[in-house]
Amino acid sequence: QVQLVESGGGLVQAGGSLRLSCAASRSMISFNAMGWSRQAPGKQRELVARITRGGSTNYADSVKGRFTISRDNANNTVYLQMNSLKPEDTAVYYCNAATRWDLRADYWGQGTQVTVSS
Image 1 (cartoon, rainbow, N blue to C red):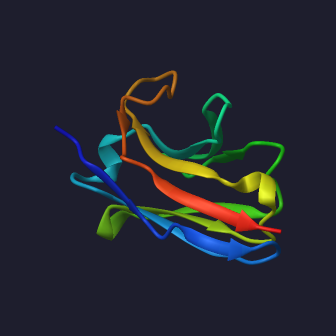
Image 2 (cartoon, one colour):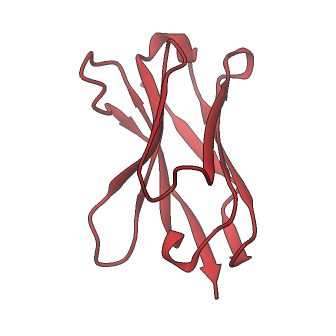
């Protein structure tokens, strides 16, 4: 059983920054990748950022240049630094982890709300 616990969400004005954290209940080196997805009201969940065990990263086009994913293997924590936030970034953000080789997520956190006011 894997637990992923997110923190760091909240309310911020447009142009502001937030850092999300996700603590995993077991060593992150057991995952092929970890990532962040988000779901806005009435929209499908979308992948925002992902980091592989080897350290490769990829981002949704909508957040490139503004968001940065990173990880601390010693503390089994993955971060999402979000800068220059826009109202359209408002969503519930979910941490996820993948053991599959196709990097599809096996495990999900409960989610943390991010609200960006204009």
